[in-house]
Length: 327
Image 1 (cartoon, rainbow, N blue to C red):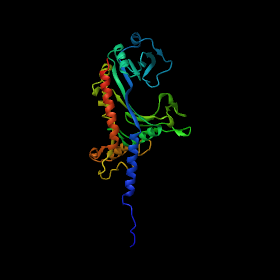
Image 2 (cartoon, helix red, strand yellow; image 1 turned 30 degrees about the vertical axis):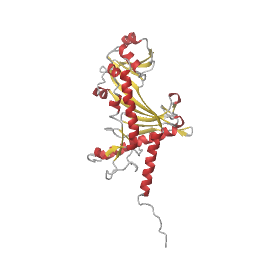
Image 3 (tube, rainbow, N blue to C red; image 1 turned 180 degrees about the vertical axis):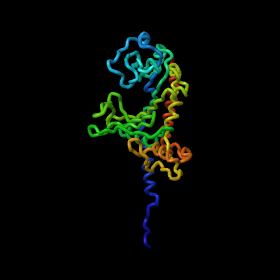
């Protein structure tokens, strides 16, 4: 009797591609060691003149150069206080601007409370909410970044932009992806950050990566919508979970969503730099093409939900711990 020749299933290639995509996602989840939220950057403003501020917080060092990051102000000054560093911009060139704008990356509650007491009634202009996702090794941090690039979705925002990755010393510098007010990027320790040749930017060599950071920069209108108007409001609660969770999602098209690409297939839509491979850009392209009720064809990715659950648990704990700290 002639032996029948075995044949592969008709959809074998598809199953193989899907298996590969699933394994990559799961591998990225398994290298995560810690999820750590923080307030990374805070900006606030007030109706105080420079001399009054010096009476309250002490003598400041005035820069001899015009402000680079706040060109609408003529002067920039600095002061190191107990627990943190402040940068102050003053003498606005337009009358409608606040007399002074202050920013800091020192965002522990004790420090913010100290500033709120020294300079009462300061209006919040911006809070940068950040989540560091630590990985076992640099390869894991790199893998996690590319998985996030494929699945991160930021509602009501246009195309994404990928940049970085310059080749330096036989390897690549860290990559960054920005979608409106959301940015996520590969990074390492502060002391390992280096200048990138032929640019005015700094980053991390791929060998020094140990995490991916997700940042959401909430501007004044978003803060006000969530009841954060003044520095004193922030002292009470940062509302991390309430604000961060509305903006960062991990999505895919439903497998049964007709002609829409499934998560293991290629996303062909291009970002602002001509790169493809992201759900967010595919969604934007499909929406602009006029597809009706598009939101009903998307869903959370099951594997990335593991990461989302960890993020939600940690930012909820951050809010609770912050509220329990003395003011």
